[in-house]
Image 1 (tube, rainbow, N blue to C red):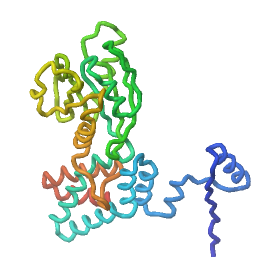
Image 2 (image 1 turned 120 degrees about the vertical axis):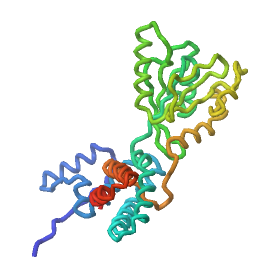
Image 3 (image 1 turned 90 degrees about the vertical axis):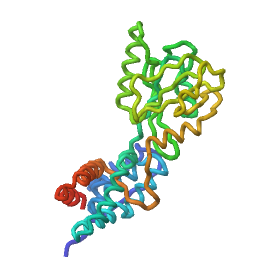
Image 4 (image 1 turned 135 degrees about the vertical axis):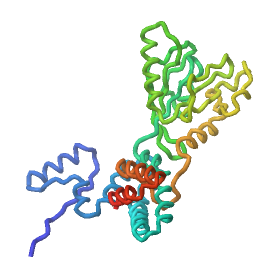
Length: 304
């Protein structure tokens, strides 16, 4: 009868160097180091290991709770129900579950990685002041001189439990200064890669609007603590704030979250939580819309 390999799990305090010293001492005496992922793969099914890895990297309590639900079987049970329903001919039941899972792909992709939200607008509209107000500390330099911000300054924050990388950018304008123009180019690159673009308009000066607003653009009127220089009601969809007094900040946070997470999982609900799962759900959703049942079955077999 085979003798089971003895296992030793260390729980240490004192920092990484102390842990490394102990590991070296055990290794010198014949112990074999095993990364925790490799160890878990020998103890758990692959779907649990994937959920556990997401859980260990979740940056907020809210995203950790979603990952914990998947570790406890929410995702595995939902996929199993889909596969069983599809095979037994209950296509509508399976399709309903799959469509719901596809709605949650965006949330699943940001359980460990923050959404990218970029503050943009003309120079001196208060982007840096608003970034500091949202972050809760002075992350960006604030000055009355236009063009102070020359680089993309990022801060990781959490809004309603969702991780967000907030980027403060250089004011967009035709700049003659080569250094400022370089900052504007970086701002434009950040805007192109953003999940959401928060475009600030100065409520106390002539408004400068984005050239091509789209569904990823959220308009915000800043400096509402100052006398209005134009009719703010001409932008009825814009959120009104004051970065100086914090007026309107709760409403802005709600607006940002609503744009990023139009639908969120209920407690205990299944959600795709790895890149492979998200990709598969996008393929399945497209196949369902096109009525390609064979393709749906193929992708379901990949998830099972």
